[in-house]
Image (cartoon, rainbow, N blue to C red; front, side):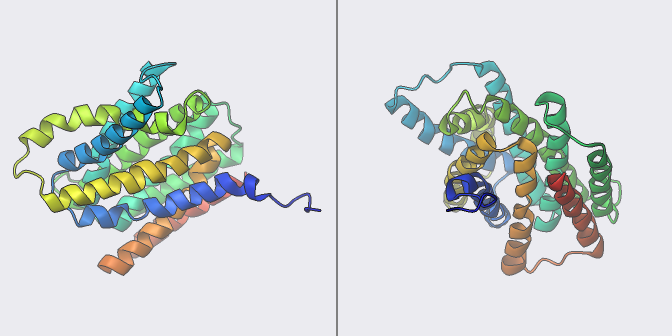
Length: 287
């Protein structure tokens, strides 16, 4: 007989899914650092590939393209297009380590928004932990001059914008996760990005190269479809705040990739600030 406190494999699946999705997402910096195209060109490829593949699948399955609360899903899609632009900008302008750690302030925002909009319980002690994590973000910023002429500051500011928009989307998609399949959610997630970035792919010079197109397409399939399929599977079965904490595995994965591929050094403030963020969110999970 199975021990009462032991999770079955089926019960563990959402946890395994988010951990695998996080490890896959940690490879994003490697893809982006090897590409030279502008963020808007990369955003188009990253959006249009999942949109076309999933639209074809939905059409063959006779699934309506617009049903239910589609206006809210389109708002999330628009936010995701902006998030994607800032995401690519962050990795282009600053190191993988800085981009990942700042981007991963999004679980802090999710914890707050989940309490406000999803009525997930948040303890008073967790509010203090949120300030602790925010202190970690400040530490990561500490060695950067406050100037928009500084590439690292621009990159980290873009990462912070990415975090906020991603947090809003996580809450929206969690709210609607019982009304849509994972395929539909990923379709909506990318749909408006294809339209928003279309003018840029036509106007940007130089034109995106074949190698960048192939890399961006691979990233779109690997993370945009496979990775987010795992992510939304976990989001459907777990609390949004729990998913956001488990997703911190991406930090470890990304830093490992950055060390193996690019030998990127991390300053003491990055380690300390990142440590505070991870520590605070780890305690949030236990709360």
